Image (cartoon, helix red, strand yellow):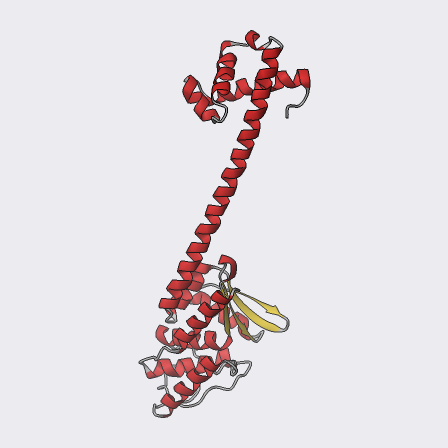
Length: 279
């Protein structure tokens, strides 16, 4: 990624880490997500973990039936079952999204390089299918695989990534990411169109040059006047309008475009039979 892309992703992580959930159960769920891995070297995540822990000391544990996770004021130790330990089925959607926000900050990474969006979670091999199943149940299907002994849950769809980030609380920075992605897509499409048009122009100029050479050659041999009327009309129009497209010639002569194409092809073939390939 470019420096600007990295700064934008860092700003997104900072925005998510600055969210202060209003519900105690959401704060507890986010603590559980943060405790699942251990991105302790990330100062943004470290500060968030400290803030949530301080808030949690003054709050009672989550009531029975709301799910299980770390007791208030504590962060769950990173274990192979940390993902499975969160009571996904027993928690409401707002708790699930808070947990996913913590999990993304702790074990997620986002790339927006070259106009492509890629988000992945790095978990244990046993956790990967569990997390992928939960994301699918939330309407955000993800793929998973084992890479170098670690489970990797991945999204490569910009639409799904945008939905996920929006659901876990991203807003201003996500809009900037999406705006940049749209801008890059438009630039790429514009470049593709320009390149295609440039190629078409080059081919048209080369074809017109061959046609003019063919017309001059046939006229010098006295063979142009022997051609059918439509062919002679097309030859005259090409001389008068060397830069015109087939459509322009057809419009001037009030004939079908295919008739113009056939006439010019005939002229080229006849000249090549006499002098060989035209330049």
